[in-house]
Amino acid sequence: MGMASKSIKTLLVAVFSIFLLLFSANSFASDAPAGGGEKHEASSFDPAKLIMEHIMDAHEFHFATIGEKHISIPLPVILYSPERGLTMFNYSKFNHGHDVYQGYKSEEGHIIAVNEAGEHDTTVTVYDMSLTRNVVQMFIALTLLCVLMIGVANKYKKNGAKVAPSGFQNAVEPVITFVRDEVGKPNLGHAYEKFMPYLLTVFFFILINNLMGLIPGSANVTGNIAFTIVLGVISFFVILFSTNRHFWAHIFNPPVPGFVKPILVPVEFLGIFTKPFALIVRLFANMVAGHIVITCFVMLIFIFGAMSKVAGWGFAPVSMAFTIFIYFIEILVAFIQAFIFTNLTAVFIGQSMEGAHHDEAHH
Amino acid sequence: MELLLPGLGLLVWTLLAFLIVFFLLKSFAWKPILSSLKERETGIADAIASADKVKAEMAALKNENEAMMAKAREERAVMIKEAKETADKMVSDAKDKAKSEYDRIVAEAQSAIMQQKNAALTDVKNQVGALVIEVAEKVLSRELSNKGDQENYIKQLAEGVKLN
Image (tube, rainbow over all chains, first blue to last red; front, top):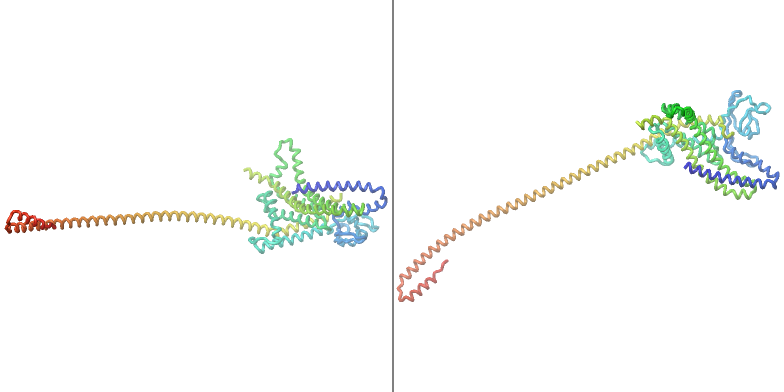
């Protein structure tokens, strides 16, 4: 499934590139006669900036801008500075980046400390611990996850094991058994039970944030490198803590001829770090790519619309069709990526415990 | 590129959120769910195992029943055979007895007949002797005129003699 979605993605990127090429050719063609007016339009509509705004973190949920009016939910800003201490206020105090508040200023969404004159004060270190839209959305998603899962668990406790599952319990149970039987058991063998809470938490943690990120207007939580770094680092420590003697022996004394060892040992040692790094980048890149592709297809309408109203309206159905198509793929990808992250973590944990198993299998 | 720079706030919040969610779900969700699933699965496995056991027991019982039935049938056949033999024997015994009785009766009858016959013969002989004597008396006592008449008379007498 991963391969299929990848190839479909490749195909779509190709189609998309062709459209962009056509568009650039068109814009070059139309550049000469239109003159200054066209340039003004281009500066007011910047697709790359909009896409980045969509996939990046922000201090507010921004839905639309109608004329000068911004429709958005500003979020709390929490700043800590060794020099100035802890500061908390609402992001709306910045008046969309126009105002300075309590010696801080929002510049392109980044909060910087300013001095009396209103200039960037580089002597003050600011740690931005704000509840950004990613944080808030993650909290909402995780609250939902906890409520749902504990509800399901209570149903099991109330009904006992012998009663057939019902309702949401019925939807969750196959997923849990899937993670247990297809991820835990094959990779971790007898030790799977110890790792099930971690694997299930990772799976549902990623899944619910992936799915919440697909709601239009929501933040792109799993496509943020900070989010994936945390999960990757946790995986790294889980993998490290489950290593055994055989694993380290294999890394520092691989069963190869002596002269290969100077090459292989660094490679094997780096492997400890590349595994979680790959997890981090994979989830991040996949989710970001999905969001970019969807936003791009929506943007195409406005790019064509900037050229001419007819082109914009004409392209809208095509763009919508592609967007809906990608949207469904993204729903699939949300599950696939959660599964891949969990499965690979389980595989790596399994590898770090492998020696003992290996010996068991042989003797 | 800014996209690849992790925000400190999100890093910290994500870590905190993950740890809280992990410990919450671990004790309040995954443990009960997994133990229930396990309990159910072992329950199902046990049920299947006991069903198999019961099935095996049933099969054994059935085999036993069949063996018993076969034995019973065999016994019945033997009993019928024995009964038949007994009956046959009884019949043949009865027949033998009847035959010997019959033989005895016949023999007795024959001997009785023979006795009576002998008695009758003796009687006849006695009567014949008496008749002969009577006839001879009559012949002797009658005065015969001629020889022819005499002979006719003898003839007549002889005809009159009826051997019983």
